[in-house]
Length: 470
Image (cartoon, rainbow, N blue to C red; front, side):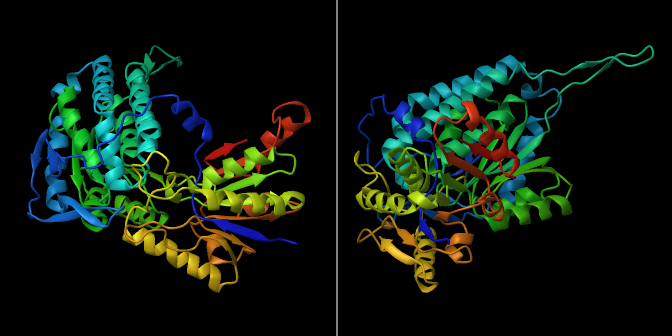
């Protein structure tokens, strides 16, 4: 017999937060001033060619923070032209030593660290994630990411190849050129670092579209890019909407590569646009419907807390979320009981409060989408065990929600929301059968010792996944 339960939220290791929590967290300014809200091209700030703006909203209150320049195709054309000029042979960027590129990335990391408190507060204001998480987790990972790629800048070598005849054969790594980068709203600063770090370390130039829901921190970092000493045109940042600015990047004939993090649906559109234009290279990191598997001999306290954190971290807005959890038959009831109790104790509220575990959803669209999934779950016969409603009078807060008796065919078990269920027999086919499997995590004691070692290759072999954690 199979039963299932669903919770709304995702996965990041508790160890990361525990390690970061040893740092002191300075008190935030809950109303940080916004300094950058225009388009960044050639190390200068510009209004949109159309003069249009759009509001960015504080998800904790639903109130407008400020207006932001709304870039579209004409602005993308300007940004690509600036990037192409910066990439020309003989330009300061092309003549720059690789070690110097590494120093610039390290300098950028130093400036972000200098302004870490401000950036964490601005991220929380614009995105809604708890300030403690912004400061201890997101900013910490941004710094590590940039410094990691800074170290690679002068260590990415070619090879000499011994071949027959009187020839000298070698490979030399060259930058791709103009890289279009489209980042999501769930980790604005971190996604920016993940895109910029490898591109800049290897000598490329960038045109980046930031998410319209959360443009403010990425735009502030543009100011720091200029301060760090990057030449004009190397990094250009265009706030705007997907159907206009994003589509213009994906279909631009003078963009050599596009990288996108976001939904599977938009990933399809980007591939089509890239293929129908100049056959530019494409890198996609798309949605997830990833399984947690709780074995009967797992430490129950540890498994409950890890699964809770995996599902609810970042307000459930994480592409590699442990959004399907399979629990072995003989511990299912205890696991569900403990998990419901943990969900009920989760602190939802003002993200600037140090005790808050969960802030609001990023915007009204996501807020209504999740409430719609909750209603669908009830209509399709899933049993609501806790939560399911709005958690505050204003803003986009949702109660931590747990469903029981969720079947594989239900909407909340198939689409990008969180589910967990009882399992007996072979779970491998079920976990890999979902369209959006991106990661997998298994809870099992002493893995890697003695007979348990066989679980590791068996787990990898049965999954077509990007990440497998045991």
